[in-house]
Image (cartoon, rainbow, N blue to C red):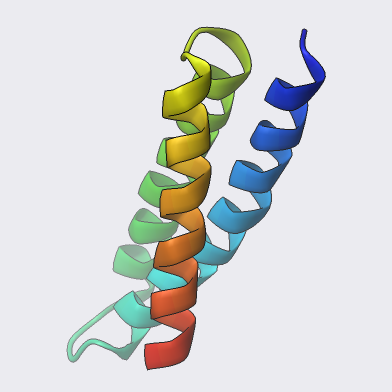
Length: 83
């Protein structure tokens, strides 16, 4: 496995962990949200991040992987600034 894939996977995983927590917090803040909806939002977002990490480590081309890293970074920045 190439080193750049590992670095990109770590960046996606770290940024994705922040996105999972933000998704759960925003779900919790909604009116009428229950514990199960918060857990469901966390499970879905964690699954998506895990899938992106696995795909970036194995089959996606370099440009797509670094595009995902950039997108995760931008989304994290926007969500953290608006929270």
